[in-house]
Length: 302
Image (cartoon, rainbow, N blue to C red; front, side, top):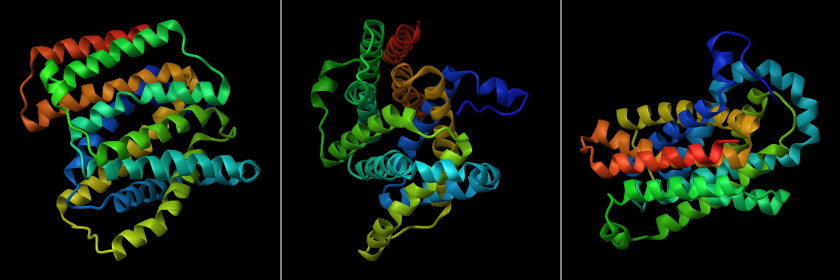
C-alpha cells in the first residue's frame, strides 16, 4: 500500500486524507439520490453489476502493469480478496440499491449516518480496537446534526418517520459495509489500482448469476438518456474515485477516524436537493451542518 501519484497535484491530493474522505462522501450522496431516482428504470442487481463491471473495465488499462506484478501476492491472499470483493462491492451495494427501490432517499441518507457505529463494532469484534472518548463524542455530535437536517429540526418529523423492508435492506447493507471498512486493513500489500481492479471484478463476477436471474424473472432495463447518464456516474464517481479515495483515506488515518466522515453524506445530500431540486435553505440546515462539522472535528483531532 502507501501508493500516491508520481508527482504534481495528484500527489498532494493523495496525501490529504480528510479531503479524500470528504470527496468520497460527496460522491456517495449523489449515488444515494441517483439510486432512488433510477429505481423505476434499472433493477438493483443490474445497476450494481453495471457499476462494478463498468468501473473495472475503465480501470483495467491503468492497472494492467500493476496486476502483472502483484498477481503472485494476490494468489496467496485469494480468500481475503474474494471476501473484500464480496462484502464491500457485491453485497453491500446491491442491498443498498434494493433498499432504495422501496424507501425514500431521505431514509437512505438517515440510515447511512449510523454506519460509523457499525465500523466501530467490527473493529472491536475483529481487532479489539475501541473508540476513544473523543471519537465517541464526535460521532454523537455529528449524528445529532444529521438528525437535525433529515428531520427538518422537528421532533414531529422524527416521530413520523416510517420504515419498511427497504430500510431493513439498507441497514443490513451498512452492517456489511462496516465489516468491509474494518477488515480493509487486512488487504494484501499490493498496488491500490491492482486491489480495486480485482475487487471490482470479483464484485461483478459474484453479481452476474443474480443479475441473470433478475432479468429472466421479468425485470426490465429502460435504456434512455437518464439510465445511460446514471451508468456513467456510478461507474466513475462513487465507484472508481470514491473507493480509491476511501481506501487511501483509511490507509492514512485508520477506520475509526475515517468513519465519522460518512455523516457528510446526508449533509451533501441536502445540499444537492437544494441545488438540483430547488429546495429552500432553512435554519435547521445551518444548525445541522454546524453540528456535523463540529463532530467530525472533535472525532478526528489527535
